[in-house]
Length: 399
Image (cartoon, rainbow, N blue to C red):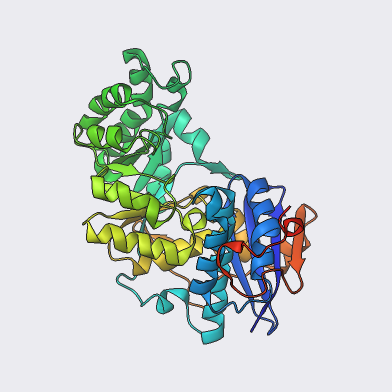
C-alpha cells in the first residue's frame, strides 16, 4: 500500500478548521484534522510534509512520524509543521483501522472505560451561542447545559480585565466583575454544575493569585493556563498557593515538551491537544508519561468532527484521563452538518464511534459546498525512502 495523494479541505464558514484526506493506491482514504492558524498548517502540509510522505506505506505510522519529525525538528517541536503532522498522523490511524476492520481505540489496546467524561467549553456557533449566553446570564446557560446532560462547563470571565495592564495587575473592582458569572451559576444551580476557569495565559503570578483567592469559595473544578507555559517555575509556585487544581498546558507539544513540566511537578493536571501535539500516538505517549508521575491528563479539544472522534478514541483508552474538552456549539451544529455524526451526552459523558478507523466520514454534501477550498499534493514524492534529517533534499525542493 502506498500514499498517492494528500488533500486539504478548508471551508470559509469553518475558518478554524483544516481536514486532511490521505489517499492510497488501494482506494482507502484516511481522515485527519487540525485547528487554528490554518494558513501556516496548510503551507507546512503541502510544502514540507506531503513531499516526504507521498509514495510511502501509510501503515508504517511510527516510522513515518519519526521520519517527518526528524525533518521538521530544525524549527523546534511546536508550530505549523507539528500541527500539520498531527493531522496526517491521525489520518494514518484512520487508514490502519479501516485496513484491519477495527475502531482505533481497539488498536490502541481497547477500553478502560465505556464512555468519556467531558466538560463543555462555552464557545458560540450557529444556534448555540454559549459564549454570548454566559456573558448575559451564566446561570441560565448552566441550566440549559444541565438539561442537555452536561455537568461541567468552562468559562473565561477574567480575560477582558488583563488587557489594560497586559496581565500585570487586576483591580478588586474587576475581580468582582469577573466573579459575576461564577456567582450566577452557583445561585441558579448550586453545585450541580462544575465550573472550570480558563485564563488563556494572560496573567503574572501576583495577579492570578489574587484572582484565585477570590474564586476559592466557589468550589472551582480547575483553573487552566494561568500563565504562559514558558514560566513553569512561576506556575508551580502558584499551584502550591491555591486550593484550586491547576491545568497546563495546551501550549505544550510532544512528550519532550511535557517532560520538564512533569519532572518539576508544575501542575496537578496536564493537558495536550492530539490535533497539535503530534497526533494519536504522541498523545498516548504523553498520557503514559504523565501516568508515571501520577498526574491525570485533559484532552484539549476545540476541534471539528475528526478531532472530536480522536478525543473519544483516546478518552476510552487512557487510564489517567481527567476529562476531555468538548463544545456543544460544535457537536450540535457543524459536526453533524459535515459528517452526520452527532455525539450524544449522557451524564456528562460521550461515547466512542464503533466503525472501523475513527468511525466518522464526510458527507457528500460537505464535499460539494461552494465555500470549500481543496488543495491536493500527489505523485511520487521527493523523499526517495526514509533517509535521516532531510539532508538529501535539494535546495529547489524545499523552497
